[in-house]
Amino acid sequence: MPELPEVETVARGLQREIAGQEILSITLGKTDFIDNPEALERELPGRTIVRVERYGKFMLLRLRANHATYGDTEESALLVHLGMTGSLAPQAVSVPQRKHTHVVMQLADGRELRYVDPRRFGRMAYLTGEPLLQELQRFGADPLEADLPEFIARVQYRKSRIKALLLDQTVFRGVGNIYADESLWKARIHPAQLGSRLNRRQLKELYEVLQTILKKAILLRGSSISDFLDADGEPGEYQQHHRVYGRDGKRCFRCQTIIRRIIVAGRSSYFCPNCQQAPRARKKTRATKLRKQRGRTG
DNA sequence: CTCGATCCCTGGACGC
DNA sequence: TGCGTCCAGGGATCGA
View 1 (cartoon, chains in turn blue, brown, cyan):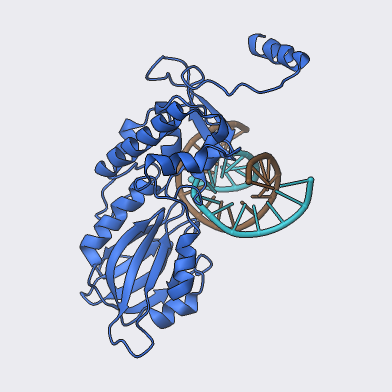
View 2: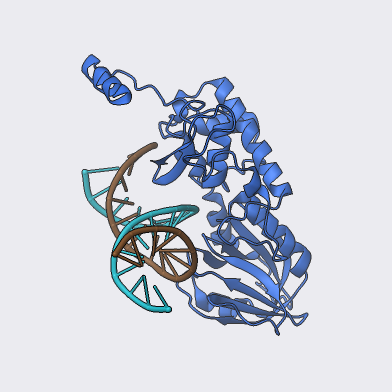
């Protein structure tokens, strides 16, 4: 499941491997995950991949027309979201195509840039000019670029649960389920805690551990769970450093309490019930409190 | 604004 | 060995 560190890893690999390559032609398979397939077929051939960037969980292949005609000088880019199971990597033509290969771009150096995505939860879009800018503006701050005041401003008055805020790409771009859970565990914050209920110390802690965890995960080329591989076909190593994600039933590394899995914001959330104290409900009636206590101890 | 529910899709886990 | 069933999960969408 590619999140910020995995996408960063792939983007860096692609930058090294295919920056400067001209796209000669394109072949599409299934296209239900592509915004406008005809635009790709019409516009990509003859353009050069200037550079590959990460934008949240998207990769941004910045493009330039080789024979720029009048009026064809505006910014253009191919946005690629890997969804759950997407991969984008250059391959020699001689390498057999994997099942679920849906986009193949022939490059000037003879290789093919192949997009493979069994579940097709990914997304691909060719965008230029104003629509491109608008698309990018939909998203929130990059957690590695935001400073502390901006981080705090995006969370502190929000009535949503902190887990939901971290996963919301219009709040922060790039954070997914693994790194949200790992950060909340490290900062000792319960995933269901409301943003507005976090104090300044907690917000500062969360900001710092989120950056630390993302940076370390990038250094280790991301987490390879299920079948994530980087552009060189190498797995990441950060999954060996997970402290809570996927560890329900196992013991907390800090306090030995059994890690639990609950659903928050519609997603599996792993946490330590001891280190990450459940939010205390406000203004509960005495009867409600008693009922809850009985349920806990009974 | 915020929530939960539902859908998309396939492979892997599991039960028999 | 081979079914059928259930589930994960990022994001879009819709109704409450």
